[in-house]
Length: 498
Ligand SMILES: [Zn+2]
Image (cartoon, rainbow, N blue to C red; front, side):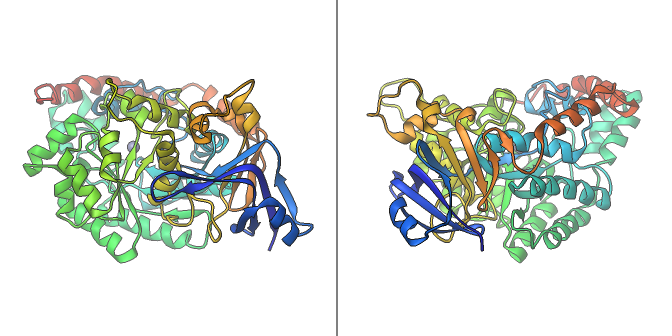
C-alpha cells in the first residue's frame, strides 16, 4: 500500500457537535492507499513513519475536499445558447443549447470543480434522450470522464414520467400549440419518453456496472413532483427500500411548483412525497425554496437533508431560500452549484461566499449563516447527501483521503489581521488561485494549476473545435423550436396566482 504524509500548518479536520471547527496545528495526515491512516502532530507521525513521502509543507492549510451536491451539465446552458429565464420558461429555452460530446462536456465542468477544491460531485443527469442503450451509453461516458480525471462522483439518471414541458400532460401541451409546432414538439418530447420500467433498469444496470469503481456511487433521483406520477413516486420509494441507495429530488424550486402541488394534492408537495415513505434520512431535497415552516419541520423530523442552490435560485428567478430557517431547524444543508454559479462557472469557493453573504437580512439582530456553517455545508453536510456519507466530508482515520491544500499566503497576501478566525478568512477570501493541490482517494489529481491525469488545454481545444462548426440541422431546428415554444409555455402560466 502506498503511503504518504500530508503536512500543513493547519488542518481543518471537521466540525464539533456544536458546529465549531476543529483545527490542528503543525499537523500531518498519514495516507495509506485511498484512506487516511492517522492524523496527528507532524513531528510524531514523521518519527513513526521514517522515509515516507511528504506532500505539502509550510504555508499551507488543509481542508476536507468540498462537495458540490447538485450538478447537471458541463458547459453551461448560457454558453450553449440558452439565456437565463424563470425556470418554467427556461425549459423550452434550453432546446436552443448546442450538443456537446458527453465526455468532453463532463470534463469541462469537472476541471472547474476540482480547481476550486471540489472532490465529490452529485451529478444528476436529467436529460438523456433515446432508448435504454443510448441512456446507458451517455451515462457511462459521463461517469467514465470522472474516473478518467480522478474525481469522485455520485451519479443518477433522473426518473421522470410526465409533464416534460409544462406542469401539465405532454398531450395537452402539444394540443394547445399552433398546428405547425405540434409535430416537432411531440417528436422532441418523445425522445425523452423512456418508460418508467426502463428508467429503473438503467439505475440497476449502472449500479451493477460501477459497483467496483471506488470513485463512483450510483443513486436515485426522483426528478420533481410535477415530473412524476404517483406510480413513479411509489417506484422510487421501492428502489430506495430495496437498495438503500440515497435519493436527491428537486422540490418546491419555484412558486409555480408550490401552486402545482396545491392543485394536484390539495396541500404541500413535501407532505405528498412523504405519504409514499420517501422522506427520510435517505432523501435530499434540492432547492426547497418554497418549503413552508411546516415542510422544513417535517424534513428535519424525518432526518432528511436539503441542498441549497444559491446561484441557481437567483439566476432562474426562483426566489431566496430560507437558509436561516433551515439551519435553525437543524437540517443538514448542502451546497449545490446546479447548472452554474453567478460567474457562469463552477467555482465552489465563490458559491460558498455567495451563501455566506446573501442570507444576511437587514436589522442588527437578524440571523445570518456563519463561515463555519457554510464550510460545514460544503463538506460534512454535502457528504451526507451522497452514497459516500460517513466516508468523506471530514478528515479522520478510516475516512477517504479527499483533501484540499490551500496556499495560505495567496489567501492572505499582502495582509490579513491574524485576529480573525481561520475559517472566517477562508470562506471570505480564498479564491481558486489559492488551491495548491487536490487529492482524491489519496491521489493528487490537481497540482499548481495542472491536472495530473488529463491535459485540460487539449480538452478545451477539442471542445472549441467541435463547437466552432456551425449548428447542424437538428440544432438549428431546436433553436427555432425553443423560440417558438416560449410564448405558448408563458401563456400556460399566465393566470397562475403567483
Ligand atoms: Zn437541478
